[in-house]
Length: 385
Image (cartoon, rainbow, N blue to C red; front, side):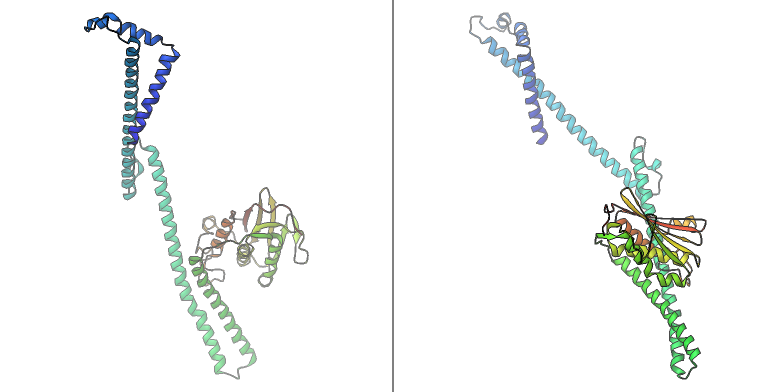
């Protein structure tokens, strides 16, 4: 119905256009020619009409002329409608053919050149890229699932060792109340160390559960990023001192400390979430740096962004591990008993938080110097006291 209505409307429009052109624009010249050739009195006599009969020659010739024009316009409209219908049918057939080719290609282990005939090269390229990305995603999910499964197995096994030690040493202390003070202090120290190890393992289990079930939502507010970094570095002082490290915070070329905080550097971020990001980076730097080395935290402003880098000196991270270092459940040190071998979620969570801020995080490691760089967009212009 819609096509028929469009054809009639198109015919009427075409008819009016032709009438305006032939009759008005040509000032009746064409109509005069038609009447002279086909509607003169001699022609009428041939059809048995009396020449004396009054005949509205002008009206008659104008009627037949309009009828011819309308017929021509209607034929044109019908032709256009038929072409539209044919084109629609061809497009539907092409879509159906494309869907069939795609189903065949995706359901079977075929090369794109085998599944798509000549003339379908563009669709073949798109389908091949989609299939490659899907396969890569499946591989990543499978790797992640395998790492998660291995990690849970390792943690479950490793929970037994410190727990057994804690119970054993506490049992000795309970069974020998008159134990010498030196020996008692040593047993208490060992039990406390194993209990701390046990706590770390339990926290890793909670990290796995929280990451799987929690969606991170940001609470944005203006924050002094320089002051936040100085505060985080100060909170890590015991861990830094225990490893012989020292952390320095340099903001736009100026060294900052708790005693000398300097001018604020305001950005609109989620302070609590970013504190976790930079806390993870500093914790990693302490764990993997050489003892007695400096950990540098540098902040710079650039056009439209603020850049924070955390640099440590230690073992070079291999390039193949750098590519996976932000993946969930990836551990740089895969040794189960290593103090540095966590759940492999710290950097994955850091990347998610940074990307939720619209920023980026990257890692580089060369000749023993490792740098993690965080770039955050749209810092608040100016400073505030």
